[in-house]
Amino acid sequence: MSNIILEIDNVQKSFGGLKALSDLNLKIEEGKVHAIIGPNGAGKSTMLNVCIGQLAPDSGTVTFYGENMIGKAPHEINQAGISRVFQTPQIFPDLSLLQNVMIPAFAKREGAFKMNIFRSLSNETEVQDEACHILEDIGLTAQLHSHAGSLSRGDKRRLELAMCLVQHPKLLLLDEPTAGMARHDTNKTIDLLKRIKEGGMTKIIIEHDMHVVFSVADHISVLAQGTIIASGTPDEIRGNPKVQEAYLGGAHL
Amino acid sequence: MKKAPTIKNDILVMLIFSAVILSMPIWLEPLGASYPDLLQKFAIFGIFAVGYNILFGLTGYLSFGHAAFLGVGSYTAVWSFKLLTMNILPAIMFSVLLSGLFALLIGFITLRRSGIYFSILTLAFAQMFYNLAYSVLTPITNGETGLQLARSDPRVIDRLFSEAGEGLPSTDFFGFAMSGYSGFYVCAGLLIIAFFISQRIFHSPFGIKLRAIKSNQTRMKYTGYNTRPYLLTAFVISGMYAGLAGGLMASTDPLAGAERMQWTASGEVVLMTILGGVGTLIGPMLGVGIIKYFENIFSALNEQALHQAYSFMPDWLANIMVTITQPFVGEGWHLTLGALFVLIVVFLPGGIMEGIEKIKNLFAKKTPEPIMLEKPLKKSPETEK
Image (cartoon, rainbow over all chains, first blue to last red):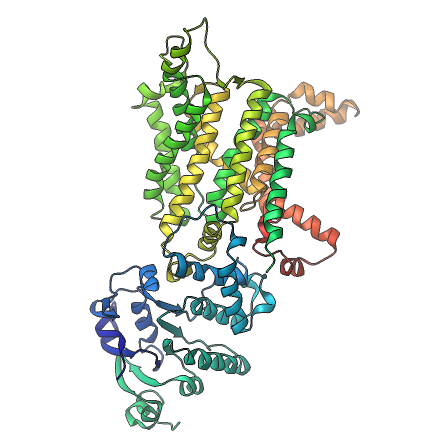
């Protein structure tokens, strides 16, 4: 068995009377694509929010490479090597595509704060080339200098993915990367995810689209009512009656 | 990747800017605005606005308290004239330093909040400074009278070289008097340096990160940036610019009063920046030029001048026109400014720079969209000149 890089241990989170996460335990193996599925309101996004420091859990720990992530600021967690693609694309709408990707690249190189006031941006060829390369990979080179805000929703998602990939994170969190995409775009995204899978980057992916889940995941966990009810390989999950009942409403995949 | 043109562009913009500023006494002559007092105002407020734009234009944080730094700069400069020397170099150095320290302190506290709460906090601080200058700080600020020079001031550095002369000494920059045209050229030189630094910041990785904070601060945090120090640095830099402007105000007219710190002074720089074009390099300078020029013209007009202006009309029409226009001139100049501001914000939210861009597009007969695609690398549309 390979390394466990992220460990969620007994995490609890309530919003008022609502228990969003209860006794959540999850181990993520290095180099694997780990899919989290579950019905709406199961706590999938809450789980990711806890991982990136957006939400503080009521109790429990999240350890990443043996280091406790609870109580750390979002930028520290990112610098530790966790990047996230949000459910609604979080990009810089007023900047060009290239700049959108260069900014995370700078964060990776320069850390959380650097006061390089007198360096000229046009001399940063390395960062520029790196950003161009990623954008090319993702298929967005045509609009390199247009405002990111003018992109279609699907392209914004892909741009956000590029922004995360340029940081070469140790762990990439994807929150419904294909939600709201047309079939054609979804397939492109699947191809892309498969390709970056070969790079060995560990990923947690939350997805409703079973087609996407079963094409990219090595391991699937099913979340219902804030806790993991089943975990296993895609084949095991497909055949698990508990899952079918909780999530798929008894229908067969 | 083409990159040479941008640096070349920057240098070109810099050269044109310097030429335009330094030749102001010549090309403003026909406009009747080439006298030194007004020119000095252009340069000094230019520094103020260019610096303010680094905070407001790049990060989007709207500070209503920058007049406080202007005041700090002025008082510091006058104290330097009183205690050390009439040379403005130490005066403006201390102005910049001290206002930077104040900005660090105020920024540290106010930047814990964003949006309207940040604006209110900065306004509160500025008003606090204003009131302190009138009350407990009177030993330093000389209250309502304002801080003035006196013959009996120690001026220790000057005393090393010469005895105290008759009458009040005047400020200078290594022999260049700070009054008249030489004063303008000193201010203009500093404006050009200030503009150069602002241009470097705009086109540095640091500048683009500030823009990114304005665009989506949440994304910035989850991208691994600690945004607070970035904002604080921008705040301190703009505070130092304001301090420099304040120091120069005191240098051209060695008197510091608390009214310089009133909220209207903070409001004025916001107006100038928005009028010219927020987040553009040249915009704030244009805003300064227009506001100060028209302030100069409109506030000087009175009823008599209006009658003269309308003398070509029949009497009854001239009388009506005078009645209509009178509230807008003289004391009522702020009414004109207000109306102008409303028009700009409603029709050209990007300020004059947006207007220029629109006219350029009109002549190029292109829609704005493709032009955006052809923008040279690394230049956001606003910085395009």
